[in-house]
Amino acid sequence: MYTKKNLRGLQLDHYKNSLKLNDEQREVLIGTLLGDASMSFRKGKPHYSVKFEQKAERQVYINHLYEIFEPYVGAPPVPRFIKGEECDNKIKSYWFRTYEHKSLIFYYNFFYKIKDGKKVKVVPKTIHKFLTARALAYWFMDDGTFNWNGTTKSYLFCTQGFQQFECQRLCEALKGNFQISASVHKDKDKWRIYILATSSNLFRDLIRPYVHSEFYYKL
Image (tube, rainbow, N blue to C red; front, side):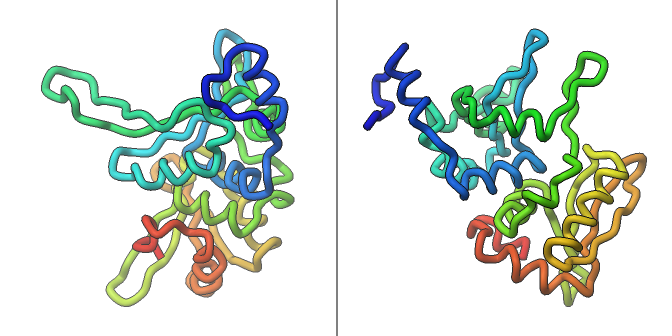
């Protein structure tokens, strides 16, 4: 049995080769890669590691993600400081990155395409096969929010980074997998996904078991 402490070189390689993603990690990867998590493309090459980053006030949540992926991580979350003399020592966010690992190759190829030499995050055509209740909850924690009209909440996803047809693809997955009805609305020149009022209770009850207490206010 390998432990990470003080591992270097071949020992670290052997340790990483012993790792295998569990079901929770796989589902959380799907949800967070739909949201804020990212994988990098540097010097013309993909890097099969995942970066998790959350704004400073969500430190509890980034620590929670670290606990899930700790076997795949060499160092705990660290702060990112706002640049500029007037902002010295003011923390902007917390982040950590996993090791590069062969088990993450699938997720890079699933979520990223290279267009004109640049990496673009996409909604995969087969996202419906991987969108579980847990994945949906982590996507919501990353990119979901709500509107409050004084009596009820309505839920939406900030999917402005995706194309309209990709947002529609996600709506179809919500309907097909969970019977949750959603629609795509224009936000300036971008797009957001709204959960229809008729599905609000179903949506909330589905994700509640997986939502971290830090985000109960969203429910």
